[in-house]
Image (cartoon, rainbow, N blue to C red; front, side, top):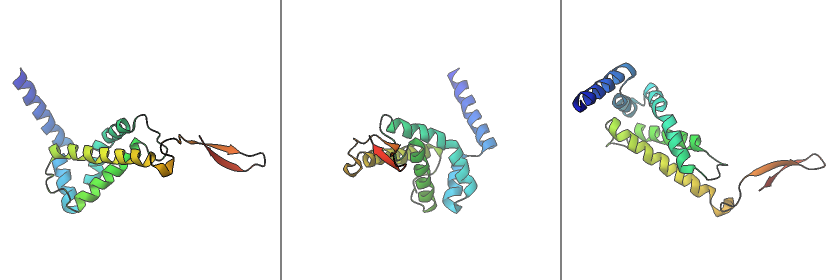
Length: 144
């Protein structure tokens, strides 16, 4: 039974790739010509997963400057730019892509945490700000 299910899973994956496009082919297209269609397909396939990953890394921290979505956008943009410049010669298929995207996303999320906790940004003590209005009608921000 185990052999049949693994064969079925492999067949389903192959069928899925035939219908939807191969991640490996998208990577090849991106690396060879910077194809925007391949970039869009990769974005559609991985963006939401990267948002969740970044959100988990940032969980519990103040996210005034950037959230999981911002981190995922930056990670994918960095990957696309690097792929176009041939910075990932060892990347030759789907199996290597996810670990690479995870590494880029986690590094960006950790860097975001460091920026938020930087001394010049209040060392993590500033939690946010409130827009307030003075009695003379002037708007200003109060940091809390």
